[in-house]
Length: 136
Image 1 (tube, rainbow, N blue to C red):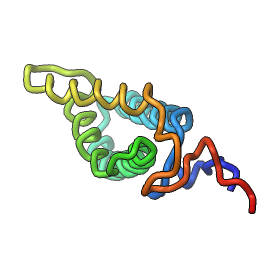
Image 2: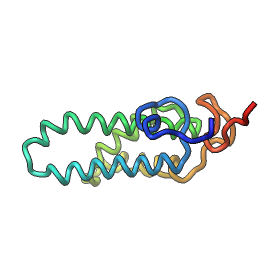
Image 3: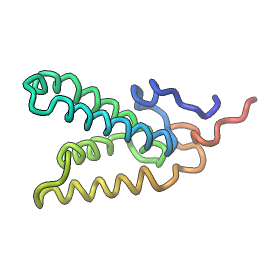
């Protein structure tokens, strides 16, 4: 194990831990893909049809990336559901008063997952991705 995580593992598996930088890059890629999709199909009827294919893939990949990063912080991956719900509620921008609690969740998630480092040693989700196990 060399501490590197594959792209397919990062986007398609919720098991294990992921370091901060790959997780932030993956989140930016997913949000950019969602924004590009909405820009390309804006005003078109197929958006209703293709959205049923595109959004579940983006949400699944987002749940995997968020779960790995939450695991690195020692948190349950189930917190990803609250973060994804907040993204959906505030997308593309908060509108009303009831979006404010969702916005606060996103601020918490930004600090927790993009600024704070992962747990220094191994935790119940695996070894620290920045300090791989030494060869035996």
